[in-house]
Image 1 (cartoon, rainbow over the protein chains, first blue to last red):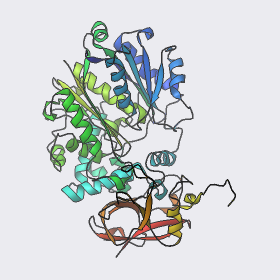
Image 2: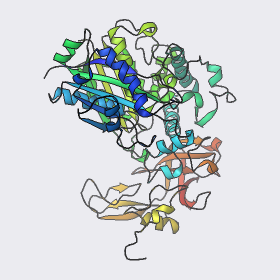
Image 3: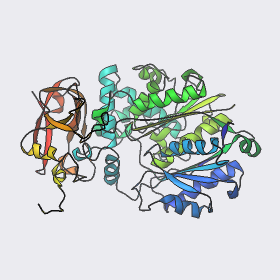
Image 4: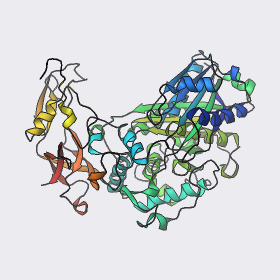
Length: 389
Length: 143
């Protein structure tokens, strides 16, 4: 089996309200990726379309999008694992290419969330949990992650200030990202003032500033066989490791709340497939839908031992010049989180980093990059490792 | 009950219910009687909470009910200051996970318990009761 590479990446700007339909929004990420890859539509053998259902009215969006992008009569289908949908799409694209069935597969991720109110979005997200046994209590994503934060604090002595440090880091890079929703600096004082917008409690102990914002956005990743990748791209980025896992949807089925077992398991698989360890990772994009999610990712991926994630952020080791730069594009906390598009955006950032094309946020000579993309509250875990060789 | 009418008692569970029919609808009947119940597989004796109608270990549907009794340990909790559509009238409210050893139970802390008295690891007891809008539920109380 030959290698499988990524030859084109693109994303739209992530915005609070996109003034258009899903097909037009998807076009924005698509056109950037097509120009990046330097290919024509007929080079694409299949598309995988990824989003979380019920945010817009279109059923079976793959067909509509394939038509609009001029990708008929090639096959297309829909893939969904909530917030990690486009990482799942990448795994499917990898499989389609590695099997020899197709030479080039496009992964499209999108979400328009602004057609719903924030409370309606939380209701949809709440129904991504167990609708029989949890949703009737009035659950929502920030509250589930707040329970993880409380458990992490109780077990390891992590503080609200540690979580705030993660948001401050995210904001320092979000300011540089022209495609991010939130581009203002954030201070510890803002997060620690309950009267400020960012310090206001949402689900105790998490504050508004600990949570990413809903957003509208699209992403696009073009995956190719080794032969095609070498013929089209001067610098293909190779898929070295893919891991994926699931966990009980109901919190009652979880072994622990101070970490995500899906991230540990997906990470273990991805490192094994790539033949490397956490120490080899030069740059990482982790799923910081909430500050506590990034803290747990440090530990679940082996960047820090359990309970020592707080030391990593306190010593600024996850900043651009630290030992393991994490989310130097501002992360979900700055970019916003258009659910189905997020994984593709994370992949795009790591591809640009490995190519040395990341501009102001470029990390020094990374050989391997990692993407950690979580669906639901640790329900679906996806870890992807990309490399230069 | 008419011949083709489904047993839809589950629609009475929680502030807002998202499903009316399951094969463990007796859960709701027990709640009405003041009992919080889980199921146990008659073949392998595994205890399930939330209750389930089938055992994926034994591939059987031969279960019996047991009562969630005694004290559990608070694993974690969060108080919501903002709520999804349908739950705003309940604000603020606290969701929690309580560990009973053989199983864990997810639910709300009773509104009579102040947040300041909550600690991870403390003992709590589940009791049946009504939601703010008068529907069937259960909640955790201090012992």
